Amino acid sequence: MSDAAPRRPAGGPSASAPALLEVRDLQKRFPIRRGLFAGVSGWIRAVDGVSLSIRPGETLALVGESGSGKTTTGRCILRLLEPTAGSVRFDGVDLLALKPREMRRMRRKIQVVFQDPYGSLNPRMRIGTIVREPLDIHRIGASRAERDAMVARLLERVGLEPAMMRRYPHEFSGGQRQRIGVARALALHPRLIVADEPVSALDVSVQAQVINLFIDLQEEFGIAYLFIAHDLAVVERIADRVAVMYLGTIVEEAQAAEIFKNPLHPYTRALLQAIPIPDPSRSRERTVIRGDLPSPAAPPPGCRFHTRCPVAVEECRRIEPPLLEVAPGHWVACHLVPGPAGKRSAAAGGAAGRPPGRGGAGAR
Ligand SMILES: Nc1ncnc2c1ncn2[C@@H]1O[C@H](COP(=O)(O)OP(=O)(O)OP(=O)(O)O)[C@@H](O)[C@H]1O
Ligand code: SF4
Ligand SMILES: [Mg+2]
Image (cartoon, rainbow, N blue to C red; front, side, top):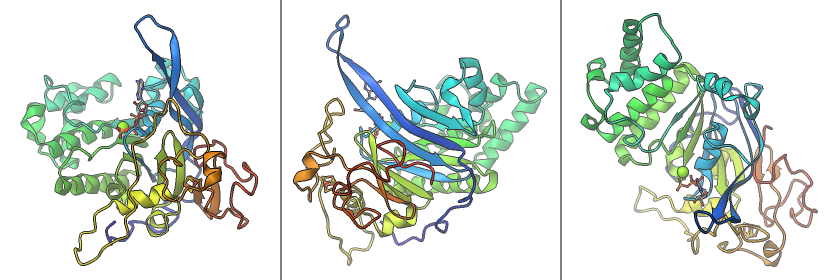
Protein backbone atom coordinates (compact mmCIF):
# COMPACT_ATOMS: atom_id res chain seq x y z
CA MET A 1 0.00 0.00 0.00
CA SER A 2 1.43 3.40 -0.88
CA ASP A 3 0.81 6.60 1.03
CA ALA A 4 -0.90 8.17 -1.98
CA ALA A 5 -4.16 9.87 -1.07
CA PRO A 6 -7.26 8.35 -2.63
CA ARG A 7 -8.27 10.24 -5.71
CA ARG A 8 -11.77 11.07 -4.59
CA PRO A 9 -13.50 11.77 -1.30
CA ALA A 10 -15.67 8.96 0.07
CA GLY A 11 -18.95 8.85 -1.76
CA GLY A 12 -17.48 9.28 -5.23
CA PRO A 13 -18.60 11.64 -7.95
CA SER A 14 -22.25 10.69 -7.97
CA ALA A 15 -22.97 9.05 -4.65
CA SER A 16 -26.66 9.86 -4.90
CA ALA A 17 -27.08 8.95 -8.60
CA PRO A 18 -29.04 5.80 -9.47
CA ALA A 19 -26.93 2.81 -10.43
CA LEU A 20 -25.80 2.51 -14.05
CA LEU A 21 -25.05 -1.19 -13.62
CA GLU A 22 -26.93 -3.35 -11.14
CA VAL A 23 -25.94 -7.00 -10.79
CA ARG A 24 -28.00 -9.22 -8.49
CA ASP A 25 -27.13 -12.69 -7.24
CA LEU A 26 -25.13 -13.57 -10.34
CA GLN A 27 -24.16 -17.21 -10.72
CA LYS A 28 -22.14 -19.00 -13.35
CA ARG A 29 -21.50 -22.73 -13.22
CA PHE A 30 -19.41 -24.63 -15.73
CA PRO A 31 -20.12 -28.34 -16.23
CA ILE A 32 -17.37 -30.87 -15.49
CA ARG A 33 -17.20 -33.74 -17.97
CA ARG A 34 -14.68 -36.56 -17.61
CA GLY A 35 -14.66 -37.44 -21.32
CA LEU A 36 -15.84 -36.07 -24.65
CA PHE A 37 -19.10 -38.02 -24.56
CA ALA A 38 -19.40 -38.41 -20.78
CA GLY A 39 -22.27 -36.86 -18.85
CA VAL A 40 -21.86 -34.01 -16.41
CA SER A 41 -20.10 -35.23 -13.27
CA GLY A 42 -20.10 -31.96 -11.35
CA TRP A 43 -20.17 -28.19 -11.58
CA ILE A 44 -17.52 -25.50 -11.20
CA ARG A 45 -19.17 -22.71 -9.25
CA ALA A 46 -17.05 -19.93 -10.75
CA VAL A 47 -19.42 -17.15 -9.66
CA ASP A 48 -21.70 -18.05 -6.80
CA GLY A 49 -24.08 -15.24 -5.94
CA VAL A 50 -22.37 -11.94 -6.70
CA SER A 51 -24.25 -8.65 -6.37
CA LEU A 52 -22.71 -5.30 -7.19
CA SER A 53 -23.63 -1.91 -8.52
CA ILE A 54 -21.78 0.89 -10.29
CA ARG A 55 -22.97 4.46 -10.62
CA PRO A 56 -22.30 6.69 -13.63
CA GLY A 57 -18.70 7.84 -13.73
CA GLU A 58 -17.69 5.57 -10.85
CA THR A 59 -14.95 2.95 -10.64
CA LEU A 60 -15.64 -0.28 -8.81
CA ALA A 61 -12.51 -2.38 -8.49
CA LEU A 62 -13.07 -6.13 -8.33
CA VAL A 63 -10.05 -7.69 -6.68
CA GLY A 64 -9.06 -11.24 -5.77
CA GLU A 65 -6.48 -13.89 -6.49
CA SER A 66 -6.36 -16.01 -9.63
CA GLY A 67 -9.39 -18.26 -10.01
CA SER A 68 -11.69 -16.25 -7.73
CA GLY A 69 -14.16 -15.63 -10.56
CA LYS A 70 -13.42 -12.02 -11.57
CA THR A 71 -13.19 -12.57 -15.32
CA THR A 72 -16.26 -14.82 -15.31
CA THR A 73 -18.21 -12.06 -13.51
CA GLY A 74 -17.09 -9.51 -16.11
CA ARG A 75 -17.89 -11.80 -19.04
CA CYS A 76 -21.36 -12.56 -17.68
CA ILE A 77 -22.08 -8.82 -17.35
CA LEU A 78 -21.03 -8.35 -20.98
CA ARG A 79 -22.98 -11.50 -21.94
CA LEU A 80 -19.88 -12.96 -23.50
CA LEU A 81 -20.93 -15.82 -21.19
CA GLU A 82 -24.54 -16.64 -20.33
CA PRO A 83 -25.03 -16.55 -16.53
CA THR A 84 -26.61 -19.57 -14.86
CA ALA A 85 -28.77 -17.34 -12.66
CA GLY A 86 -29.12 -13.78 -11.46
CA SER A 87 -29.92 -10.48 -13.09
CA VAL A 88 -27.90 -7.78 -14.81
CA ARG A 89 -29.51 -4.38 -15.36
CA PHE A 90 -27.75 -1.63 -17.26
CA ASP A 91 -29.29 1.82 -17.34
CA GLY A 92 -32.57 0.24 -16.25
CA VAL A 93 -32.53 -2.42 -19.02
CA ASP A 94 -32.52 -6.13 -18.19
CA LEU A 95 -29.52 -7.25 -20.27
CA LEU A 96 -30.26 -10.96 -19.87
CA ALA A 97 -33.66 -10.49 -21.55
CA LEU A 98 -32.18 -8.88 -24.68
CA LYS A 99 -32.13 -10.71 -27.99
CA PRO A 100 -28.68 -11.06 -29.61
CA ARG A 101 -29.31 -8.16 -31.99
CA GLU A 102 -30.49 -5.89 -29.15
CA MET A 103 -27.49 -6.93 -27.09
CA ARG A 104 -25.17 -6.03 -29.98
CA ARG A 105 -26.69 -2.54 -30.02
CA MET A 106 -26.28 -2.29 -26.25
CA ARG A 107 -22.57 -3.12 -26.61
CA ARG A 108 -22.03 0.40 -27.90
CA LYS A 109 -22.56 1.52 -24.34
CA ILE A 110 -20.62 -1.26 -22.59
CA GLN A 111 -17.12 -1.92 -23.84
CA VAL A 112 -14.30 -4.15 -22.69
CA VAL A 113 -10.53 -3.83 -22.40
CA PHE A 114 -8.67 -7.11 -21.97
CA GLN A 115 -5.53 -8.01 -20.06
CA ASP A 116 -3.46 -9.18 -22.99
CA PRO A 117 -3.00 -6.17 -25.27
CA TYR A 118 -1.36 -8.34 -27.94
CA GLY A 119 -3.77 -11.27 -27.98
CA SER A 120 -6.76 -8.96 -28.19
CA LEU A 121 -5.50 -7.11 -31.30
CA ASN A 122 -5.64 -8.93 -34.64
CA PRO A 123 -1.95 -9.09 -35.73
CA ARG A 124 -2.89 -8.94 -39.43
CA MET A 125 -4.91 -5.74 -39.15
CA ARG A 126 -3.49 -2.24 -39.21
CA ILE A 127 -4.09 -0.15 -36.09
CA GLY A 128 -6.37 2.21 -38.00
CA THR A 129 -8.60 -0.68 -39.06
CA ILE A 130 -8.65 -2.15 -35.54
CA VAL A 131 -9.76 1.12 -33.95
CA ARG A 132 -12.17 1.90 -36.82
CA GLU A 133 -13.84 -1.52 -36.74
CA PRO A 134 -16.49 -0.66 -34.11
CA LEU A 135 -17.31 2.53 -36.05
CA ASP A 136 -17.70 0.48 -39.25
CA ILE A 137 -19.87 -2.16 -37.55
CA HIS A 138 -22.21 0.42 -36.05
CA ARG A 139 -22.10 2.61 -39.18
CA ILE A 140 -20.95 5.72 -37.32
CA GLY A 141 -19.90 8.66 -39.53
CA ALA A 142 -20.95 9.44 -43.07
CA SER A 143 -17.89 8.10 -44.85
CA ARG A 144 -14.71 6.14 -44.42
CA ALA A 145 -12.75 9.42 -44.44
CA GLU A 146 -14.89 10.72 -41.59
CA ARG A 147 -14.31 7.54 -39.60
CA ASP A 148 -10.57 7.74 -40.24
CA ALA A 149 -10.59 11.29 -38.89
CA MET A 150 -12.36 9.97 -35.77
CA VAL A 151 -9.72 7.25 -35.41
CA ALA A 152 -6.95 9.85 -35.66
CA ARG A 153 -8.57 11.85 -32.86
CA LEU A 154 -9.00 8.74 -30.72
CA LEU A 155 -5.34 7.78 -31.16
CA GLU A 156 -4.28 11.27 -30.21
CA ARG A 157 -6.53 11.16 -27.17
CA VAL A 158 -4.84 8.03 -25.84
CA GLY A 159 -1.37 9.49 -26.44
CA LEU A 160 -0.48 7.96 -29.82
CA GLU A 161 0.41 9.61 -33.12
CA PRO A 162 -2.38 9.57 -35.72
CA ALA A 163 0.24 8.46 -38.30
CA MET A 164 0.50 5.18 -36.39
CA MET A 165 -2.79 4.15 -38.01
CA ARG A 166 -0.87 2.50 -40.81
CA ARG A 167 1.22 0.26 -38.56
CA TYR A 168 0.57 -3.27 -37.24
CA PRO A 169 0.26 -4.37 -33.57
CA HIS A 170 3.70 -6.04 -33.45
CA GLU A 171 5.35 -2.67 -34.07
CA PHE A 172 4.17 -1.38 -30.67
CA SER A 173 5.22 -1.85 -27.05
CA GLY A 174 2.87 -3.46 -24.52
CA GLY A 175 1.83 -0.10 -23.10
CA GLN A 176 1.15 1.31 -26.58
CA ARG A 177 -0.88 -1.76 -27.51
CA GLN A 178 -3.00 -1.30 -24.40
CA ARG A 179 -3.55 2.35 -25.43
CA ILE A 180 -4.77 1.04 -28.80
CA GLY A 181 -7.18 -1.30 -26.97
CA VAL A 182 -8.45 1.67 -24.96
CA ALA A 183 -8.89 3.80 -28.13
CA ARG A 184 -10.94 1.02 -29.68
CA ALA A 185 -13.08 0.70 -26.54
CA LEU A 186 -13.63 4.48 -26.53
CA ALA A 187 -14.68 4.71 -30.16
CA LEU A 188 -18.39 4.30 -29.48
CA HIS A 189 -18.51 6.60 -26.42
CA PRO A 190 -19.34 3.87 -23.91
CA ARG A 191 -20.85 4.63 -20.52
CA LEU A 192 -19.22 1.59 -18.90
CA ILE A 193 -15.92 -0.13 -19.60
CA VAL A 194 -15.20 -3.55 -18.13
CA ALA A 195 -11.41 -3.49 -17.85
CA ASP A 196 -10.16 -7.01 -17.11
CA GLU A 197 -6.66 -6.73 -15.64
CA PRO A 198 -5.78 -4.03 -18.19
CA VAL A 199 -2.36 -3.31 -16.71
CA SER A 200 -1.33 -6.69 -15.27
CA ALA A 201 0.84 -7.57 -18.27
CA LEU A 202 2.70 -4.23 -18.22
CA ASP A 203 5.86 -3.07 -16.44
CA VAL A 204 5.19 -1.15 -13.23
CA SER A 205 6.21 2.24 -14.70
CA VAL A 206 3.99 1.71 -17.73
CA GLN A 207 1.15 0.51 -15.48
CA ALA A 208 1.05 3.94 -13.81
CA GLN A 209 0.84 5.71 -17.19
CA VAL A 210 -2.02 3.55 -18.41
CA ILE A 211 -3.88 3.94 -15.09
CA ASN A 212 -3.47 7.72 -15.48
CA LEU A 213 -4.96 7.46 -18.95
CA PHE A 214 -7.98 5.57 -17.55
CA ILE A 215 -8.42 8.27 -14.86
CA ASP A 216 -8.14 11.15 -17.36
CA LEU A 217 -10.63 9.56 -19.73
CA GLN A 218 -13.09 9.00 -16.91
CA GLU A 219 -12.84 12.61 -15.85
CA GLU A 220 -13.31 13.81 -19.43
CA PHE A 221 -16.08 11.47 -20.57
CA GLY A 222 -17.73 10.38 -17.30
CA ILE A 223 -17.21 6.69 -18.07
CA ALA A 224 -17.83 4.15 -15.32
CA TYR A 225 -15.36 1.28 -14.88
CA LEU A 226 -15.55 -2.22 -13.55
CA PHE A 227 -11.81 -2.46 -13.03
CA ILE A 228 -10.64 -6.03 -12.44
CA ALA A 229 -7.26 -6.72 -10.84
CA HIS A 230 -5.66 -9.38 -8.67
CA ASP A 231 -3.50 -6.84 -6.85
CA LEU A 232 -4.94 -4.20 -4.50
CA ALA A 233 -1.96 -1.88 -5.11
CA VAL A 234 -2.96 -1.50 -8.76
CA VAL A 235 -6.42 -0.17 -7.94
CA GLU A 236 -5.53 2.20 -5.12
CA ARG A 237 -5.47 5.33 -7.28
CA ILE A 238 -8.33 4.52 -9.62
CA ALA A 239 -10.96 2.88 -7.43
CA ASP A 240 -13.86 4.70 -5.80
CA ARG A 241 -15.02 1.47 -4.22
CA VAL A 242 -13.38 -1.93 -3.90
CA ALA A 243 -15.10 -5.34 -3.84
CA VAL A 244 -12.90 -8.24 -2.74
CA MET A 245 -13.76 -11.59 -4.29
CA TYR A 246 -12.91 -15.02 -2.92
CA LEU A 247 -13.91 -18.32 -4.50
CA GLY A 248 -16.92 -16.98 -6.40
CA THR A 249 -18.28 -14.62 -3.73
CA ILE A 250 -17.67 -11.08 -2.53
CA VAL A 251 -16.29 -11.12 1.02
CA GLU A 252 -15.82 -7.38 1.61
CA GLU A 253 -16.85 -4.18 -0.11
CA ALA A 254 -16.32 -0.56 0.88
CA GLN A 255 -15.13 2.82 -0.31
CA ALA A 256 -11.53 2.50 -1.49
CA ALA A 257 -10.14 4.76 1.24
CA GLU A 258 -11.95 2.64 3.86
CA ILE A 259 -10.65 -0.66 2.46
CA PHE A 260 -7.06 0.59 2.55
CA LYS A 261 -7.37 2.22 5.98
CA ASN A 262 -9.61 -0.22 7.75
CA PRO A 263 -9.72 -3.65 6.04
CA LEU A 264 -11.87 -5.98 8.14
CA HIS A 265 -11.95 -9.35 6.40
CA PRO A 266 -8.89 -11.55 7.08
CA TYR A 267 -8.55 -12.21 3.34
CA THR A 268 -8.53 -8.48 2.49
CA ARG A 269 -5.98 -7.90 5.25
CA ALA A 270 -3.74 -10.59 3.83
CA LEU A 271 -4.04 -9.12 0.31
CA LEU A 272 -3.07 -5.70 1.65
CA GLN A 273 -0.17 -7.08 3.64
CA ALA A 274 1.16 -8.71 0.48
CA ILE A 275 1.73 -5.26 -1.08
CA PRO A 276 5.41 -4.28 -0.75
CA ILE A 277 6.15 -1.04 1.13
CA PRO A 278 8.43 1.23 -0.95
CA ASP A 279 10.22 2.63 2.14
CA PRO A 280 12.69 -0.04 3.44
CA SER A 281 12.83 1.58 6.90
CA ARG A 282 9.17 0.70 7.46
CA SER A 283 7.81 -2.76 7.92
CA ARG A 284 4.37 -4.26 8.15
CA GLU A 285 2.98 -7.19 10.00
CA ARG A 286 2.48 -9.92 7.41
CA THR A 287 -0.06 -12.68 7.29
CA VAL A 288 0.74 -15.26 4.68
CA ILE A 289 -2.33 -16.95 3.25
CA ARG A 290 -1.72 -20.66 3.61
CA GLY A 291 -2.25 -23.10 0.76
CA ASP A 292 -3.91 -22.72 -2.60
CA LEU A 293 -7.37 -21.56 -3.51
CA PRO A 294 -9.71 -24.54 -2.96
CA SER A 295 -11.49 -25.92 -6.02
CA PRO A 296 -14.62 -23.96 -6.96
CA ALA A 297 -16.13 -27.38 -7.84
CA ALA A 298 -16.23 -28.20 -4.12
CA PRO A 299 -16.02 -25.00 -2.07
CA PRO A 300 -15.38 -25.59 1.66
CA PRO A 301 -18.52 -25.66 3.83
CA GLY A 302 -19.17 -22.79 6.23
CA CYS A 303 -16.90 -19.86 5.46
CA ARG A 304 -15.17 -20.61 2.17
CA PHE A 305 -12.01 -19.00 3.49
CA HIS A 306 -11.79 -21.15 6.65
CA THR A 307 -9.26 -23.61 5.20
CA ARG A 308 -6.74 -20.78 4.85
CA CYS A 309 -7.85 -18.27 7.45
CA PRO A 310 -5.27 -17.60 10.21
CA VAL A 311 -7.97 -16.68 12.75
CA ALA A 312 -10.70 -19.23 11.95
CA VAL A 313 -12.82 -20.49 14.84
CA GLU A 314 -14.94 -23.62 15.08
CA GLU A 315 -18.17 -22.12 13.75
CA CYS A 316 -16.35 -20.96 10.58
CA ARG A 317 -16.28 -24.62 9.46
CA ARG A 318 -20.04 -25.00 9.83
CA ILE A 319 -21.79 -21.69 9.21
CA GLU A 320 -21.44 -19.49 6.19
CA PRO A 321 -21.05 -15.86 7.33
CA PRO A 322 -23.54 -13.51 5.66
CA LEU A 323 -22.36 -10.29 4.10
CA LEU A 324 -23.38 -7.58 6.58
CA GLU A 325 -23.13 -3.80 6.53
CA VAL A 326 -20.94 -3.30 9.58
CA ALA A 327 -20.51 0.46 9.05
CA PRO A 328 -22.18 2.75 6.51
CA GLY A 329 -21.24 1.41 3.07
CA HIS A 330 -18.80 -1.16 4.51
CA TRP A 331 -19.90 -4.76 3.98
CA VAL A 332 -18.08 -7.78 5.39
CA ALA A 333 -18.72 -11.53 5.52
CA CYS A 334 -16.83 -12.78 8.59
CA HIS A 335 -18.02 -14.23 11.88
CA LEU A 336 -15.36 -12.34 13.81
CA VAL A 337 -16.35 -8.89 12.59
CA PRO A 338 -19.09 -7.40 14.76
CA GLY A 339 -22.33 -6.98 12.85
CA PRO A 340 -24.41 -3.79 12.71
CA ALA A 341 -25.97 -4.39 16.13
CA GLY A 342 -22.56 -5.08 17.64
CA LYS A 343 -23.24 -8.82 17.55
CA ARG A 344 -21.18 -11.37 15.76
CA SER A 345 -22.94 -12.10 12.54
CA ALA A 346 -23.39 -15.87 12.96
CA ALA A 347 -24.64 -15.42 16.49
CA ALA A 348 -26.98 -12.75 15.16
CA GLY A 349 -28.78 -15.48 13.27
CA GLY A 350 -27.60 -15.53 9.70
CA ALA A 351 -29.42 -13.62 7.03
CA ALA A 352 -30.55 -10.53 8.94
CA GLY A 353 -29.31 -7.45 7.11
CA ARG A 354 -28.01 -9.48 4.23
CA PRO A 355 -28.28 -7.64 0.91
CA PRO A 356 -29.75 -9.47 -2.07
CA GLY A 357 -27.16 -12.00 -3.20
CA ARG A 358 -25.22 -14.02 -0.70
CA GLY A 359 -21.85 -13.33 -2.20
CA GLY A 360 -21.96 -9.64 -2.88
CA ALA A 361 -22.88 -6.18 -1.85
CA GLY A 362 -25.49 -4.32 -3.77
CA ALA A 363 -26.58 -0.76 -4.40
CA ARG A 364 -26.71 1.05 -1.15
N1 LIG B 1 -14.92 -21.85 -19.69
C1 LIG B 1 -14.66 -22.41 -18.51
N2 LIG B 1 -14.88 -23.73 -18.30
C2 LIG B 1 -14.66 -24.29 -17.09
N3 LIG B 1 -14.16 -23.62 -16.03
C3 LIG B 1 -13.91 -22.31 -16.18
C4 LIG B 1 -14.13 -21.63 -17.42
N4 LIG B 1 -13.77 -20.32 -17.27
C5 LIG B 1 -13.36 -20.19 -15.98
N5 LIG B 1 -13.43 -21.38 -15.34
C6 LIG B 1 -13.08 -21.63 -13.93
O1 LIG B 1 -13.82 -20.73 -13.14
C7 LIG B 1 -13.04 -20.26 -12.04
C8 LIG B 1 -12.97 -18.75 -12.09
O2 LIG B 1 -12.21 -18.36 -13.22
P1 LIG B 1 -11.97 -16.84 -13.63
O3 LIG B 1 -11.19 -16.85 -14.90
O4 LIG B 1 -13.26 -16.13 -13.64
O5 LIG B 1 -11.09 -16.32 -12.43
P2 LIG B 1 -10.26 -14.98 -12.30
O6 LIG B 1 -10.54 -14.44 -10.94
O7 LIG B 1 -10.50 -14.09 -13.46
O8 LIG B 1 -8.75 -15.50 -12.31
P3 LIG B 1 -7.43 -14.87 -13.03
O9 LIG B 1 -6.90 -13.86 -12.03
O10 LIG B 1 -6.54 -16.05 -13.18
O11 LIG B 1 -7.81 -14.26 -14.32
C9 LIG B 1 -11.68 -20.94 -12.18
O12 LIG B 1 -11.68 -22.07 -11.36
C10 LIG B 1 -11.63 -21.32 -13.63
O13 LIG B 1 -10.82 -22.45 -13.83
S1 SF4 C 1 -15.62 -16.32 9.05
FE1 SF4 C 1 -14.00 -17.38 10.12
S2 SF4 C 1 -12.80 -18.39 8.51
FE2 SF4 C 1 -14.09 -16.86 7.53
S3 SF4 C 1 -12.80 -15.10 7.39
FE3 SF4 C 1 -13.94 -14.87 9.29
S4 SF4 C 1 -12.66 -15.79 10.87
FE4 SF4 C 1 -11.82 -16.44 8.90
MG1 LIG D 1 -9.30 -13.27 -14.94
